[in-house]
Image 1 (cartoon, rainbow, N blue to C red):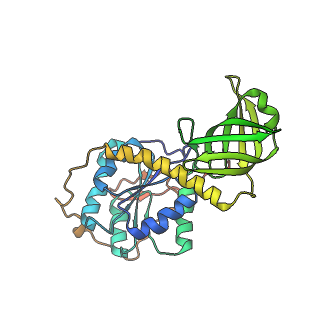
Image 2 (cartoon, rainbow, N blue to C red):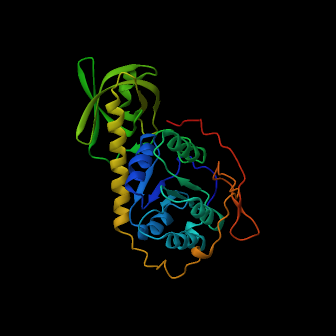
Image 3 (tube, rainbow, N blue to C red):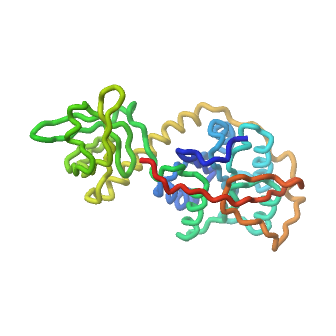
Length: 316
């Protein structure tokens, strides 16, 4: 079983078999709010991918592809695979009724809960808040891409009539870290406002307005500065950088997905689901946190212990 401690850099969030509306409304909303979200359209590859990221969150859309009975068997199989026992498993649906919600919650361990998604901003905000509370972002509030091996990222700065090349170490939608020769440190003193830094990422070049957040000397003799984008930059700059980061994340994940084998298990062999009884007014103990879940002695039930977390400390 994986540790229930919230990881420093957050957790990957996977949506398995999302419908068009779930993908359009919920997934897009979460990405715009800096959650590291991925889509796994083929449920037969999902367990292999999740085993690579055993502390990730996984939400399965049960509205399509399989029957509820087959989805029930599919999710129940997670409990017998050691690599998947630390996954924060949950369900999303647009059509499930109270009977189905009761059957799943009372008979499968679902630390991620069962959420019926409606096209309301409040529903999306609440879903994101629960993810955030449970370490989906870690201590960072913004996704960051290490660009040291990316060939389509570069930067330069003009100062005192000269053109200086800078190396982009990593980027986020709110700023980036750069490295350069130590003799250029006077250009990057803390709180210095820089209005003419050119950042190229992918097929687009942007002239950015930045303020120097911090500067330090690296062990190899070079210098590094963290630059924060100012409000002078258009919203399109932030959006483009975020989209660029997800393009890189998706490309890496898609490579992994293409190279894993499909699960050939048949999930229609038994129909335990149809024999389950739903209880209309049962109290599920609504999940406010995914931490520290301890099973009760009676099989199929889970006691939820509420443990808050403070993730206000933002690491740049």
